[in-house]
Amino acid sequence: MQNPIEDIDLNSSQEDSSREGIFLRLLSSSYNDIYYSVLAIVGNRTETEDVIQDVCILLWQKFDDFDTETDFRKWACAFAFNLSKAYVRKQRRRRGFGLSDDILGTISRMQSAGGELFELRRELLQNCLKKLSRKDQQFLLECHGRRSSPVKFAQRERIPVATAYTRLSRLRKVLHDCISRAMKGE
Image (tube, rainbow, N blue to C red):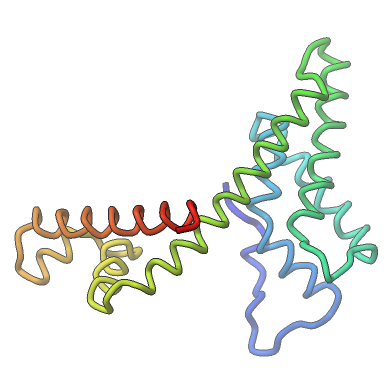
């Protein structure tokens, strides 16, 4: 799934503080969450694209009502959920079958909770990464970079590939344990 909003230059040298610029930045940063909340309800990528267009239009129309002190992602996902539910209801009437509103609500709550858990784990990961040595941080960055891998690292450093993978596995376990301890409140 491609975020069509990413094609717009949101990081120009002058920060666009216009209403449109603010809206586009908020929409771009929340687009994936909005998309997947619609997909969770609609269940079909092609139909999801249609609903997403309607969601974006509605969000823009209602943007004046948005309280900037609140979470745009949650606000937008609420609109997306309601439009998705209405779309599914309409399709259910047309086709004669579909998911009930209770099931759609449960799916939405699960998707929302999953997103919040993911966000929490991402924040904990950032904190755990800071606890690693500079050398280990650099190694992880190199192994998980866009154009890098443990194999390329091993070749460049002239070490066995197995050694690089062992080190990567050890660091992943350290991070997993750190996140798990933080989740338990230790």
